[in-house]
Image (tube, rainbow, N blue to C red; front, side, top):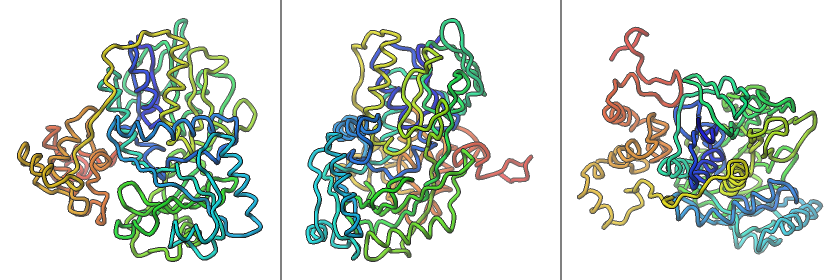
Length: 485
């Protein structure tokens, strides 16, 4: 019998697992994919929102401001990339100027510090490449950028080190109420638990509806992005938003924490919970709209496009809701929903973890651990290391001198670390998200065969068993399926 079963190993689920691992609890995290950070958490802007956009009094507003404030300290504690670069919400028409003041007042009500309106001249000083149509902007100096993979993986690893168990490729098929707790049936085996935390992303409605008569409906909202080469990453230094619409915060232009340029996302409601294809129309719209924010879009420097799905709740108990749904289901004691975690869910994650952990503590009344490990060290980066650090790493392990990914200067030593550490990589996408091998200009065209070889060697399996990510994504078909080894 587990104390807590968390469904979903995205950033919210892993933040909750990490906070609960501070206590004497038996915790299990179930994930239907082969790794953490495989759903909504892997395909987003990596923006740490300051907190001026959410409606005052909502959970979004509260958790956004709290999460943003916690992010810098957490990044130092768990060693993942984060930078406070500030954000600007651009106004392109004088008649819309009043909307900037509405956002400013909203932010001040939410407790966002330092926000102010900047006029065209100061805007140019902050961002020399800002588009000619921008007349003013809301400036939020506390806005930031983060590596979404780094945050998610760091939370998961720290939770695991502190005793949380993770089971991958375990799709939840049924949740049954019991006299004391729940029976969670998965594609692998069944698990008994006192408390269930539903952090299943776009599938959270399905989990909720298994146990509650207060039905929920989540409509996946697809957002497409364009990622540009690092040689144009310095076109902007702040995150440039446009005045938001009913469908979201519009097309943004931002540097990434790793030095690339990113534009997007679109916002399109789609019927399927796995519809992450990009479209010509969507990518063209990104380029068209982003051209308002900066003078020249470096279209020839695009290295990849991708899409993610946001979990947008369109109905809960017969009503629409514009907020997160986080709390114990009224007719299912011990079943805690963490649903509808769309933007700014990544920014909220540190606060969401604490918020849900408090709910679980109220139910189970656990004792605090005396030996909780609060820190975690990430994978050393040869690309970012000093000469002294590089020499030390190579001396300790010569594999750090063997460059595998030329675009990002990722070495075999880093890949070995990614595989061998807690919750280590088992797929090439897992290696990529932990080390950036394959994220550069050639998008794994050069390094991928070597990464497959290293994975097969370390995991002691045939190359035909190495996958890109989930089921069916093998690189080499076994002989019985027409392949050759």
